[in-house]
Structure formats: C-alpha cells, structure tokens
Image (cartoon, rainbow, N blue to C red):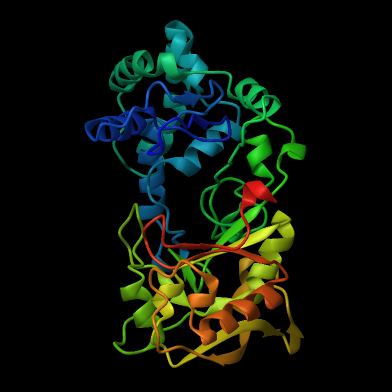
Length: 377
C-alpha cells in the first residue's frame, strides 16, 4: 500500500477481521497514504468475528505448556474451522442483514455452548457482534470487488501481478510439522486457489528465507541454538536480528540454516528462485554451520521428514564454513560482499537446489542485492 499507483487485493483465501483491517487503514491514512481507492476485497473472504478469538484464546489457555501450538489468539484457526464446517460467515453475508443475523445466531449458539460449558469462559454477546459487523460493513462496501475477475482482467491487460503469502511452508496445514502448524495452506499453490486465478498464471515462485532459521511457538526444530547465553551464535541471531513475534512479541527460536528443510520446501513450492534475508545478522561470526541432513532412527536422510514426531527425532548433520569479519550491512552489489559471505550463499544455493535471486542486507527496501528480477525472468 505504501507504493503509489499500485492496486492491492485481498483474495477469498484470506480470513478477514474487518474491524482490525479498518484500524490499519486508519493508521495508514494518518500518514497520508490513500488506501480505500486502491484496496479491493473479495466478497468470499471468511469473517473473523469476536467469538473466534474467544475460542482461540480459551483453547490455547487450557493446554499444557508442551501442547501449546503458539497461536496468536486472533481467531484465525477457529475461523478456518467454521469455513470447513460450512457454518462460517463471509463478507458477502454482511450486505444482507437479516441473513447475517440468522446465521450469526446459529453459529453463536454453537460457539457459546463450547465457551461456557467446556472452557468455562464467558459467552459472546450477539447484539455487540451484530452491531459492530453492520457498522464495519458500510465502511468496506465500496472496497468489495470480484477479485478473481479483476486479477484475470489485469493479467490479460499485461499488468504484473505479485502474490504474497503468509507464514511458511513448514507451517502449512498439509505439509508442515503437524500438529504444530497453522490452520490453512500457505504454500505457493494456494496463491491460485486463494485468489481465484488459474495456477498457470504463477510463472515465477520466489522463496523467501532468512540466512539462518527461526521458529515461533512450539514444535520440533532440529537446528535450534541457545538464544539466552550472551556471546553464542544463537544469541546474536536473536538480538541483532530482533527476533520477536510481530503479533505476540514472543522471542523467536533461532538456529543454523537448515538446507534439508529448505530442500523439502523448495520442492513443495516449485521454487524458481530464492531470496535470502538478514545476511547482515551473521556479520562477525567466526564460523557458520549449515544443516545438510539428519540421522533418523539410525539412517542418514537429506530431506526433512513428514510429521512433527519424526522431525523431533532428527539429529542434525552439519557442515561448517568460515564466517566473515567484514560487514554485509547495506551492501547493494554482489561483488562488494566479503568473499566468505559469497561462498556461504553459493553453498546454500547448491544445497537447496534453487538459484539465489535476491539477497537482503538490511531492513530498508534499497538494502538489497538483485541478481535476478522476478518480473524479468
């Protein structure tokens, strides 16, 4: 949204908290950014409503520490559950008040029973949810558009389309470390299903990964490092990389780059190129390790196994490389990187079986090395 003249679309695959969205729009408008004329919302988006976050928080709070998924508590999972159970409300329901009220009463009766009888939590008030939804509906009405048709027309007219996913491949409901996963598909193929375009329009798939590994919340992490002891590599990754969850503020777990996990991700997504971010976080480390495979039940494997239980039993196999004493921060040309940094990236490219297209060397947009432009491929 911060780039003038770029239209933005929220596809049908996104579960949408309209009240939160309007708050974000208001913040951008305070900064002088025009949002409402450029943002288009699919009428098919499932709605995140207050009872979803109530269920999410009650459910996570009832779990023991070792069973917690690490949910943000924003109601995303329960919204997807309602979608799959065919009881969810969608954006288009907002513009039919009587139908919306009827559906809301039915679904709220179900969720309030679970909240009060199972979790012993307070019920969610129907009238408050209904009134807020109706007020929000009028604000978003001008932005609601047939996103599928709009994207098809834009593609036919020769415009470049960029689809952005959320979370990571190994948090995908089908391909991730189940059950320590999110509630939706977040692999590249979902860009087509989640926006209403054909998969043939996805001609270039850019995989984005840090120069080291991170994870928020529970779940197995073979290459995990100590992030609490000052002076160790994991501590540097955590502190220099500012590895804290954007929603929860929790510390992210950090570890060495896992090429075996990325090989799995690359194949699932059909990656065309890689974008390596936060290379500068590794500046000053004397030695770097790369996880190239695992020992699992007495066998050596070079691909992340399927399922959390199997991943938890994996013992990482590392190869080491020299670090670099110079800085990569803000470097914008490949040849200006320290030789050891280039060697590290070259090795990642070989191990991951995907060419590196972009390297990020700092938090600003222009602190980037562009080896291959995705739109010029």
